[in-house]
Length: 316
Length: 267
Image (cartoon, rainbow over all chains, first blue to last red; front, side):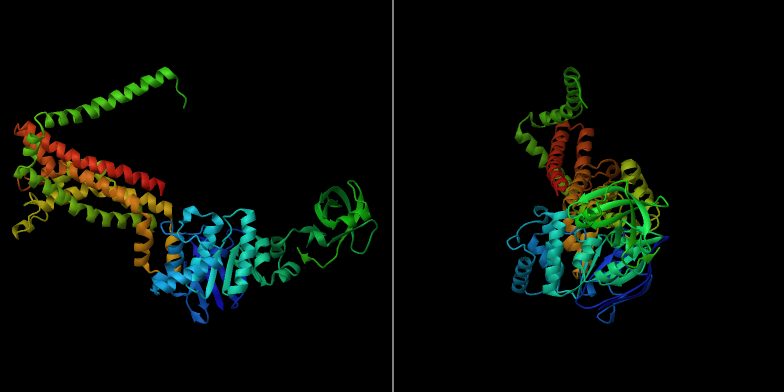
């Protein structure tokens, strides 16, 4: 388990981490999710020992490692921009940690081949990083981090520099890899979809604090704060409360708690239909419905309808 | 910028004429004078005891100066790029001082400092001679060549950033291992270029060395001093021959420089 307790970190006047405490269970894949400047990368770097906290304690597997250099923490770290050793071949990159540990040559060679097989880079041993694509470089970096059998794998926006398609593939691949290798993994991301897709636990961070920690679904369904609610998905404001657009129910006639609205625009997005509305206070909101529901109501611009929230919303 | 045909040709002609008059004519003239009496006469001039001693002394100075400035240069470049300390701006400025200060002034200041009546003049009394001897010439050459390695390594360090070094640390490498396995190989072409510049400058240094050396032939006379002394003694042919040797060394440095520069910009 990784435990952070009461972590504070300043950069000059900027308070990057404010009394952050979190426990990351063994074998989990936890995402630190938040906008830029929320402190998520700083927290990861503090766990890694690449930054020293001003206050607080970091423990890995029950040992206080707060004053320990990164070398002694038993971690693997993957950087957003790969941090590939450019002057070394793929083989030497992956073997780096093992060579530092002075493992026998034969053992290093077989371990490197095995890891490159796992990350799908078998046969690329002799290439240099400049001869690989971004996705391949990142997989090489993962193999390099895994080579030393870390207790903890720390990934700092690992797919942030890749294009959308590659990012999605690598995300699925990382999830499968984690299911096979089971190493405790912490992933930093600003992409809520990525966090929901890959992680089994998400810690949402904002302005140097952790807002909420939980399973992706719990966070989505029962956000503790308005920030978590709006960061994890689209929202609409109805009667001064935040709701998910797909929890808005439209009807022709008045119903309990329903608010009268005017339809401004109907957008067909394949399976779903987005209905843009304006309420009595002249505020805009969007409701998300299925094609069938929209067809049943025969929605069109200019129409007067009623809207209510299907589920209890978060107080705004 | 698009330039019309006629002005373009005119500009080229001017540029070529400029290079021709300023560079090629003097160098060509020396080469012509050196070899007008044949290779044999040239060979006789450059194999005199004074010549050989001057070459050996020059190479000796280079051999001492280069390693010192490599170590110092890497250290300072690392401090300037990675360091977070007070006085970094001051250090940044001071590194360029040798570019700004005339070598003659360097020589004079060394005499003031290390000469018999200087601050450290007492050393001469216990038998450690700096001025009019090898240490003085080495100090003078160190000073004038100080910025080259720093200024070539610094931008490379900036460019590679410190992520690779951090990655090495997370993989278990200590500071020393990270330096040898990651930092040094990453800066190798910039460093090589800096070394070649240092060598070229050290070979050609005249002003500072001429002040701190008494120019005794066969003893404290470097190649540049040999060229100057032979010229003053009206041994013009000997002067040209020594100059040609010096140019030969410089040419090798120039070729290496081009090779390293191309590699460093590609890497």
